[in-house]
Amino acid sequence: MKLLYITTRISGAGGLQRVLSVKTNYLIDKGYKVVIAVTNADEDEMIYNFNDEIEIIKVYPNRNKLFYFSSYKKHIKRFTDKVSPDVVIVCDNGFKGFLLPLIIKKLPLVYERHGSRFLEIKEKGRGLLEAVSDKVTYHITGYLARRFDKFVLLNKSAETEWNLKNASVIPNPLWFKATNISPLNNKIAIAVGRHVYEKGYDRMFEIWREVVKEHPDWILKIYGKVNPDYDVKAIASYYSISENVVFEDPQSNIIKAYHEASVCLLTSRSEGFGMVLLEAMACGVPCIAYNCPVGLEEIIQDDVNGYLVADGDKQEFLNRVNLVIEDVKYRQLLGIHAKNSVKKFELNVIMDKWEDLFKSLLNRTDITKSV
Image (cartoon, rainbow, N blue to C red; front, side, top):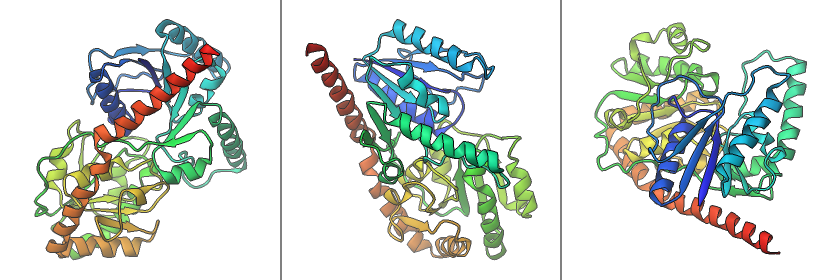
C-alpha cells in the first residue's frame, strides 16, 4: 500500500514532526510505501530522522494571497497524480489543510488533527473583525471536515469538539520504550514545548515565582526553540526568576533530560494531545498540568499518576508543585504509577489502529470500484 502524507514541515522540533517521523518510519518497516509532501518547507534543522526509503517532495506555492489557492491546488494535483497513492493523509492544522476535499476527489482522504478545534489562540485585544473572521472560519472548517473519508482526532474530548460522523479517535504513540526511570532526586523541574503564547509560559512563571520563594534551590529547565516574537526569557525576567530558570535548545532525544528531572510542568492554554506528558511519564516523572482543552484527562488521572489542575487555578497548581517537591516518597509513588499508565500508548498498539483504518479505506475503495 502506498501512502501520501501532506504536511506543512518536517524540520524543526515540533510535536507533529516527531510523531510523523515515528509513524512513517514504522510503516516503512512494515512494508508500506510512504511519500511525504511538504508544503511550507523551510531551512530549519532536521531534528528527527526519516527513513531514507521515504520519498520527500517539497513544494513552494505562490505566497501572494490572490494566487495562493490556485497555486496550491496546482501543486497538489501535480504530485498526487505523480505519486498515485492508495490513501492520502493530511497533517496540516492550518486552514489550507481543510481544502483538500475540494482538490482531491477520487482518493480516500484522511485528515489527522493535531490540535484543539480552538487551536488559534491569540493574545488579548482582538477586535470585531478578527472575531467575525474566527466565527466564519469555525463554520467553514466544520463543513469541510465532513468531506473527508476519515477525520482522525487524538482523544475523546476533541471528538466532542468536532461532533463529526466521520470521526475516529487514534492517540499519538509513545515513540520510545524507557528502560530506565528517573531517580527523582534532582531539584529540577522540566517543561518542554514551543515558545508561543499557547503554551502558557507566563502562567508557569507566575507559579514558579512563588515556588522558588519556598524552594530557592530548585531549577526549572525549559526545552524549546527560541522565538523572537514571544520572548520567554523576557517573561522570566519580568517575574524575577531568571536565576531559577534555565533555557535549553530542542533535543532530538529528550529522554536524558527527563531522567534528570523530578517533576514535569505543563501550563498550556490549549493542547492537541500532550505528548510531553507521555514522554515524561514513560520516564517515571510525575506531571502537573492545567486541564486545558483538550483531552489531558485521558492521560493524567488526578492524584493517581500525576495532578490535573482546573484550568487557570494557579493557587492549586502551586499547592501541587510544593507537595511533589516536599514529599519525596509520594513523588516516587506518582512516578511509578505514571510509567505503568502509559503502556496503552505504545507504538505497536497505536499503529495497529492506523493499519486497520488504512485497510478499511482501501477495502471500501475496492468495493466501490467493483460496483
